[in-house]
Image 1 (spheres, rainbow, N blue to C red):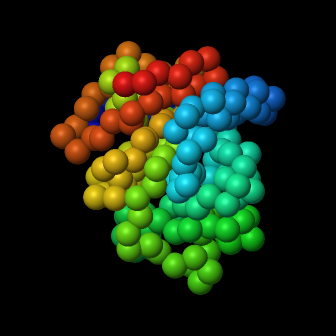
Image 2: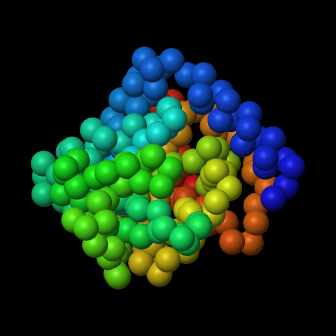
Image 3: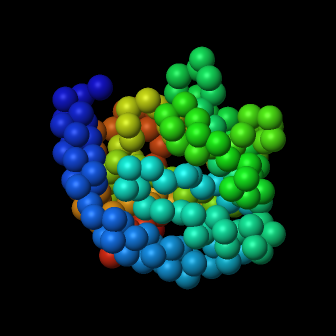
Length: 192
């Protein structure tokens, strides 16, 4: 891992940690509004989302909307004893969630079996930072790099969600990094 990546990660996480709850709420509402305006959102029948932690853009209102319209909601679950690997499971409501390995709410192991095949229409992807080419900076565990490389994700419209300050000009890129197709912040939505 490059020192540049680690320095940038530390800086962006510190800035995100310092956000006031009302600023996170306002940004999350603006991002959700922009996502709802996308034609791909309106037609999506299967969507992969994430449960927000540590001042990430909040996706929960979008989850509720998908459940209400009968769409399939997919969430990741960290695979125990397999660092960097996530399983994907279908979730029918918050009652299907429990705290996981990193205290992030994730699909309950007994209620939500891991899917062998999944091909979401849309995927909302968190990140510590995103650059103009769609590459993301995560926490460094490779979880989303592996997920985005899954065969079922090949035709998925991947949207990186972030606060505007998390958009950077250029990130150091590794050969395994997979870019997202759009980046959406509270200020803008950018198709790559």
